[in-house]
Image (cartoon, rainbow, N blue to C red):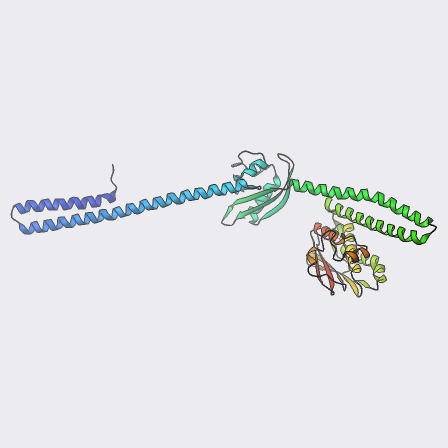
Length: 412
């Protein structure tokens, strides 16, 4: 066995002490007593130094052994934590990738392998595994900007799927990009089924309602005893008209949900100004002042027909729920957005109802809504159209103090 340089010191010291003792013994045999004393003293000192050095080296060896044991314990704990994280990632219903700066996959959980039917994606480019240029672009954009990227993507491999994708980087290690893909194919399929159902039911309702109304009008015209007949037949016609209006609103909502927004140049100021003129007679019948107070022109990119629907719904809603006072419509351009507000002096909305007024068929006062001819869909339609255009519909209201509905739309 080869000794280390540090192990020679105690051996030399101990050996030197022994040699000094032997030399002292030889001198003593010649009668030189002081030399004997000095020799034994030096030898003893050397032996003591050697033993002390050996003890220090032993302590250092023990310390090194303890550090080694702690290192092994930490390593085993780290491996256990790594296995726990891997098991957690494999148990998720979300596909997870970790990619390097070149788009190479360095980690993929079990769901990622199952979703893209790739046994071991590690070491492969994300494009080769997913066959999605959009997913690769999102990963590279996240690394380039160091900002989270989100999108809804369609995948064609290994079969048609829709996924919610998020890409982000770790600030402590910007060379790594994390990718998550959540499969929402079934959710989108159910949404399409619901939309088709609403559209089909609405179409099916229109035919019998039209027939009922026409026959009721015929009976009303030909009735000899108009007193009893007129009361019931008029009620039938009113209810059929309400069902027809509801069916029409359902069709509008279904079309807005199903079809992509087709934008073009739209003068939103002209849309709301024309809607004010169209509904002015309705407001005057209730003794209300309805006026437009805004820009002469405000151009945005939008679907004009849908914007007309938003304007009519908001203004008609203000007329329905205002008994006295006025309704003022304004259009303003602020930086890169157009801001439209419909302000009334009506009955207002209690705070507990504000979070739900944009829900479909939600009515604050069911009796009043029926009397005004509302279907409970007008605000829902307006909010959906505005959000489909990348805008926002807000409300500020207080009970008995009026309401202000504000539409914010991007200019282009």
